[in-house]
Image (cartoon, rainbow, N blue to C red):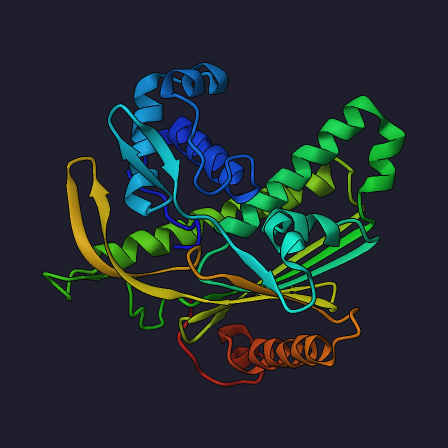
Length: 310
């Protein structure tokens, strides 16, 4: 689910390693069709037990990120593809979500308007930005000061928990709410991670002004949209699949779910001379603003409309 699944619970170290490996697949460290390092090496590098690495590999396999065969290792089979109407094919191969967000952070004033199922992918990349700025400040404080923006403003639109979540659906028992409860918990945890990363950017005085506002839509989105600095956009659809998910250490169920990683994100730049790109960015910015004001619980409540709380 767009890098937005966390299985087993598994404890802090399990989640740390899971996030680290997802980040590496998203940022191109482990490209599509390459193999992860052996589990023994990963355990040594990340300073965890091999059992933790095994459980993380099993979770990534369940999620469809990797294909694992005994004796052959773990091959990356899914990653976030980004395509563009204006970049040549060579540029497309080098474009990642991390790169696009990183480019946005090169500006003094950063705005991110995001509509998604959960904020896990966004949280991963904001955390990567935080780690990069920390590393630069440690090695070269002047460079870190130049590389960090002066302000960050994030508007994050997530589905309300009171909305009807059409997925994941247990194929054998559609009334089983556990798969949907699992996704809602992932959304809560991901939002907490994003909030913490942005808070650390401010409290550690890397970025003077940081503002995060979260609103909850009354419907579950079937698209994901990232609007960056009002001029660039990533846009994609959630792809329906049937797959297995793990509900506990010893229980897996077949579900109808959606995945965001398998569907390419389209990149549009309003800075380019392509009229279609500029139109698409403006159109989706207007779409986001209207939904933010009129289709979220908070927006309706501000207008005196009685709606269920998220």
